[in-house]
Image (cartoon, rainbow, N blue to C red; front, side, top):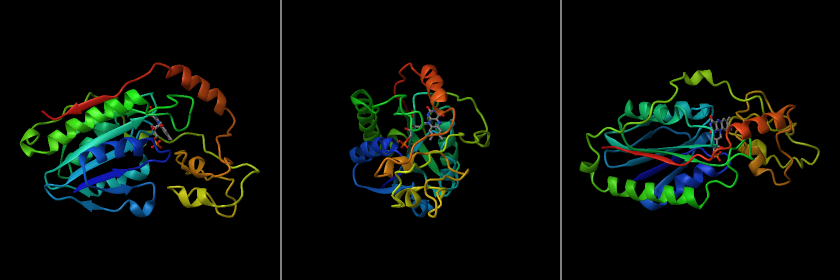
Length: 256
Ligand SMILES: Cc1cc2nc3c(=O)[nH]c(=O)nc-3n(C[C@H](O)[C@H](O)[C@H](O)COP(=O)(O)O)c2cc1C
C-alpha cells in the first residue's frame, strides 16, 4: 500500500502530493491538516510512504513534528517532498530524511518543489505552473520505476545538499496572523479548519497568538472576510517579494 501523507493549508502541497500518489497507483490519503488525521502509522516492508510537507521557516510545520516521529517503517521505502514559496527549503528535506531513516524507512527519493507563497501571495503566484507540473511528473515516473523493484534502491543512500543546519526550535513563527473583518458571517468554517485551534468560536474575527499563519482559514472563508491585516504586512511583503523575485526551479534527488 502507498500512504500519501501531507499537510496542506492552501492546497499547493496537496497538489504535488496527489500528482505523485496518482502516478504511483492505489494509495491511502492522510490529510494532516485535521488533527484527528495525524495518527501513528506503521508501514510494512513492501509499503511505501509519500511524505509531503510545506516549508515553514526552513523546516516542516511544527504541528507535524510529533506525528512524523510517530511514523514507523520496516525497511519500507519513503519518498519525501518539500514544497516552498520560492525563498528556500533550507533544512526541511534533511529534517524529514533524518527523522524517517531513524524510524525504519529508506528514503529513496526527495524533491523540493516551488509553489505560491502562502503568506506573501504575490510571491511565486500561480505556481505550480505547467513547468512545475512537468518536473513533478518526471519525478513521479522515476519514483514509480524505483519502487517496482527493491534492488533498484536497497542499500543505496540518498545524498541531499547541506542546508544551513539550524535547530528547528529556532523558527518562532511569523508575526502575521490572519483576522476576520465585519463581513464575517459566523459560519465558523475557519474555526473548524484551523489546524491548531487558534480561532475562538465566540469571536471568530480574532486570532490567538499560537496561530501558525498557515492560511487555511483564509482559504475556507466563503465571504473572503479573513486576510492578513497586521500593521507592516504590506511593507514586509514588498521587501520579501523583491528579495525572492528570481524564479527557483524544482530540485530532485534519488538513491543510488
Ligand atoms: C509560517 C510559514 C513559513 C514559511 N516559510 C517559508 C520558508 O522558509 N521558505 C519558503 O520558501 N517558503 C515558506 N513559506 C511558504 C510555504 O512553504 C509555501 O507557500 C507552501 O506552498 C505552502 O503550502 P500549502 O499551499 O500546501 O499550504 C512559509 C509559509 C508559512 C505559512
